[in-house]
Amino acid sequence: MTPGEPLIRWDWIVRNLDVIGQRVGEHLVLTGLAVGIGFVISFVLSIWIARKPRLYALVTWITGILYTIPSLALFALLIPVTGLSLLTAEIGLVGYTLLILIRNIVGGIRSVPADVREAAIGMGYTERQLLWRVELPLALSVIIAGVRVATVTTIGLTTVTALIGQGGLGYFILEGIQRFFSTPLIVGATLSVLLAVLVDAALVLLQRQLTPWARATS
Amino acid sequence: MGFLGQVGAWLSNPSRWQGVDGIPNRVGEHLFLSGLAVGIAILIALPLGVLLGHTGRGGFAAINVANMGRALPSMALLAFALPLAFSLGLGLGFWPTLLAMIPLAVPPILTNSFVAVREVDRDVLEAARGMGFREWHVLSEVELPLAAPLIIVGVRNAAVAVVATATLGALVAGGGLGRYIIDGLALQEYERLVVGAILVALLAVAVELAFGIVERLAVSTGARADSAQRDAPETASPR
Image 1 (cartoon, rainbow over the protein chains, first blue to last red):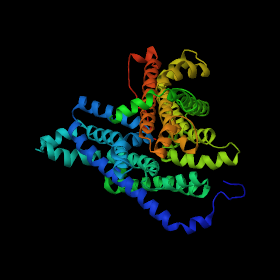
Image 2: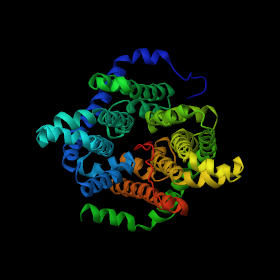
Image 3: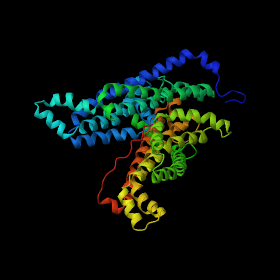
């Protein structure tokens, strides 16, 4: 950004390809951990509260407030407790996945038509069989839609975790700001957007693979 | 003295309450920048969304803008805005932050105003036209009042995202409450860090709650009776 300096210095990109690869890897690991842990927590909670409307309202209220808190503030609140650590980053990132995932898992389970449930019960399905063989398969496309939103959101938020020393593509953005150098700024920003788009497309493919019956109707 | 005591002592220092780096000034900067960004976004997105919704055109684009908006991280927008602001000679701080916020605030308002107007019951519109309403009056007297709550949800989502992104503005030498967090991190002064974080969190939650109240008040008396709650398209994302 100094006068005469080009917006993008391609030689910098070529020289730093290995670091760029490393930061992309870190970004994917941070995101994958958050969505994975968030999914396990949300899945267990959702199955427990899917048919308990008051408990569901309480859980979505609490996770909704968490969802509203700006990420930088949430990380900053955790730092005196858990330090500049991976734990701080993941507590925050996992926290932000919960609302979307719980809403979609519960919504998916509840959207199974009563007729279908009754038919299964009439055929002698136990509660557990009903859940695993009927409700969850039918809820799958809604659940994966939630995973997509949670993943894209987390990829965006992971750019902030560079501020607490956890790497990822936000590192290039911070480097660009500190050195007043536009190339890493644009590399970090472009790759984080690209990563979100590519991972989202991959999840769409996964959804098609897992729910072949939805293809005929959609 | 525990950490809370230290925070209390930090807060009780009179210098925290006056001057450029005082809490009142930082809250003011934060609100001014956020309000300006939301205001500009409303001017851009609301007429466009309402027009597209009224004519029923461009629906695919209006919906997809929201999904694109989600994939644009605030940090990335800030990173793009910084060289842009600099090449335009606008300098650091205020302008790059404002430029980063507008593409963030436009999508939720555009999508929600489109969907809100589009989803007004066609029969109601036919009835209004049958009663002799001009097209302009159909829009202003029927569609907009019925669409208002959902439009306000869009503005709320934009406002919450903008308040969060204003915090990141401190990274590019902007003012606002993010100053305390960024400076607290740099100085390892945890009192400053935590006070900043609590104020930002409170501000975001307050904005959310305030718009919730406005949204409820905006439901027109005629629409309140059938209280058919329409689900807002999911466009909010944590920032």
